[in-house]
Image (cartoon, rainbow, N blue to C red; front, side, top):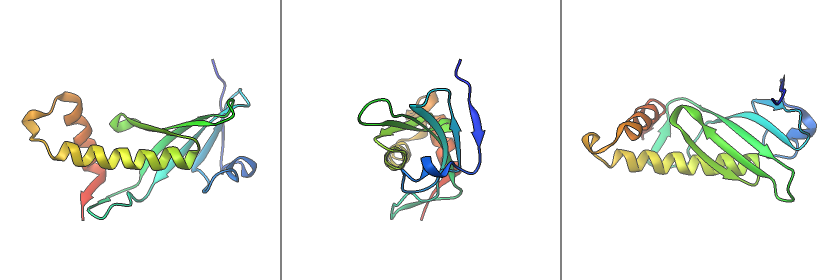
Length: 129
């Protein structure tokens, strides 16, 4: 079992490697991995916008030469990866935007159980401009 320690605010030495500071950073017992809670405030889209921020969990493994980070929006079961916290988060924004637009293009009767659930969650966070 990995032991985690919560720190707040973010550890400056770790956060300085990224474009912005995370909301919360969690250190694990491995020096090569960490988990951060981040927040999406803007979808950077001309047609849709956020009603409220989306809280995401970003897990990074820096053991390899190229770091691997995975950003997850657990409530909607959507994730994306990138080579940095900001890269994974930006990719997640793209996936959330595309997923929302795609699901909205279908009739509710044509969606399965999980897509309907995802759309309901996304509708609680996203609206058309």
